[in-house]
Amino acid sequence: MPRAIHHPNTDDIDLATVLRALGDPARLMIVRLLAEQGEQNCAALQSKLDMPVSTCSYHLRLLREAGVTRTRAAGTERWMSVRQADLDARFPGLLDALDADADREPGSVPGSSIAL
Image 1 (cartoon, helix red, strand yellow):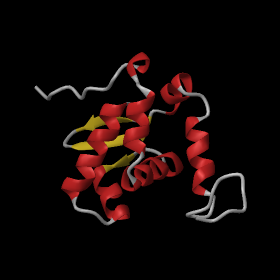
Image 2: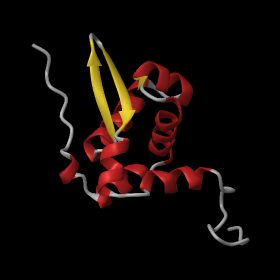
Image 3: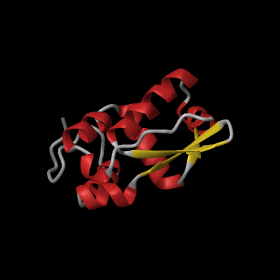
């Protein structure tokens, strides 16, 4: 019998844990890809990110354990998606802020013309 995939309950998702998970550029890119393109399997994400499968799996596990993504088993494949509704319920505007941040110039300070 296949092992169940653990996901934290919505009420157990902790902001510090979510921010720690999203603090890594690779994991942030994974979340942005999933938000833009919808549910993806590990192979598709791995090829888009150009990283070893083991590294991709590691980042996906951390995002799932933080409550940012949901993993669905389909045979031998695993499909990941962003827990949009759960994150919006716990932290309204968080994902919108990540999306807005993606549009700004790297190294700039939000809300100003100062570049770092």
